[in-house]
Image 1 (tube, helix red, strand yellow):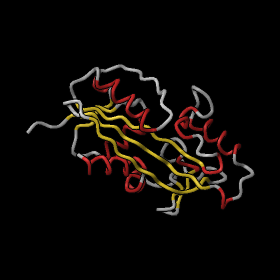
Image 2: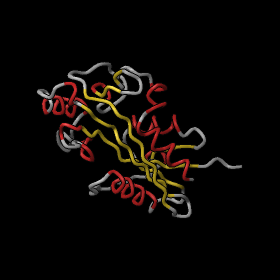
Image 3: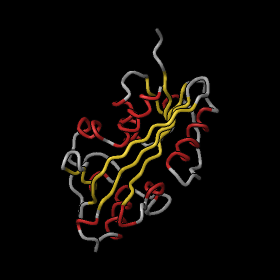
Length: 193
């Protein structure tokens, strides 16, 4: 039986590596790895809307099944921000460090017991026939007052996971992939397929 190919609508190498390590039953390729160049403008106001926008744009360019994820950090003390704007919280061309710096500055006076946060992820899969499926995942924790560890990507060094009792920045890829919001979203998706 031929291997199932799944194209992922992301240019984020960390996110792609995480998805590849979780979906081991598929030949997972980033759009660029498959020679497809596309750019989808994330105009949605929810993670589900943005995931669907990206998946639909990529699906227009291929016959393969496609997967898109939209995820981010939702901080209680900031009313759920940065949310869908997590990747560009500190501006359009923000770096991970720039986003973390802005976040830490925004909640510098917030006491530890009020620093609750969740990583949220919604994935949208469009199969070869064009059917759409969604999965959602949440990982709860809190925001640390400073970086701890240098692993992962994005906000990982300042996100303390309730599940592991540690910063995502010090967890191994294997540990993080056991409980991450993306893992949970993909598990939710796979249950629906």
